[in-house]
Amino acid sequence: MNEPLHSLLPPTATPLMRTLEQVMARMADIPIPFKQLWDPHTCPEPLLPWLAWSLSVDTWRSTWPVHIKRARIAAAIEIQRCKGSVKSVRDVVRSFGGDVLITEWWQQNPPAAPHTFTLLLTLSGQGGSQSTAEFVADVITEVIRTKPVRSHFTFTQGVHTIGQIGLLGGAQITAYRRLHLTQAA
Image (cartoon, rainbow, N blue to C red; front, side, top):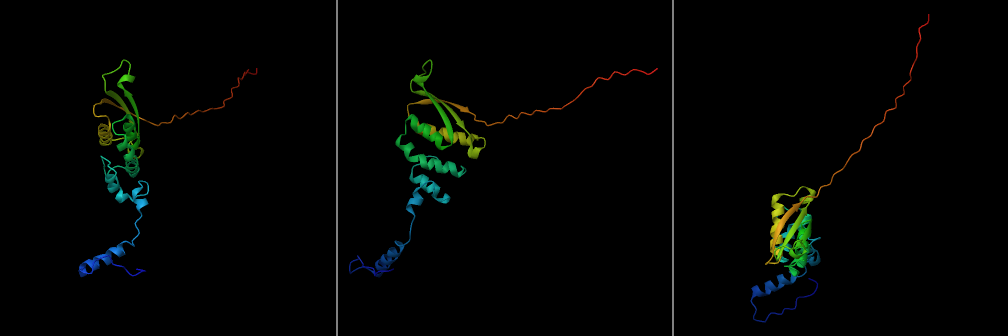
């Protein structure tokens, strides 16, 4: 410590209280990177579950890839702020790395039952692989927690695939010549 400690304790403080005061003063000198710890993109991976808990992320799986964990934490405040709206459902699906098409009851032709919507969900899976049933169930569970309570939905899962078409061509040059032969007599 650079400066002598000016005690705020009363003169009747016990030796234990004075020792604790000195220890607490030394602990205050330990640097704590608060900005790094509260940023989902720079927080150390072992501390992500605690950050998710503090920002009220409803579902958390240790099996998710790190980029999904960070995206879920980054979207947590906005999802909580708009919970019960179409925007929050879209934000939840986006935080899982998926695309969603929501068609509400009044947008359908003919109009469906009031307070219903269809959900066309396209997930690429964890880390670009095909999505598992558990992963899709996690997304649906979060949609149920986020949607308006009075609303019911029909779920359809879409598939996003990437493919390539290979064209192959070949050419062979062939020359033909017709020969007329006659027999010498």
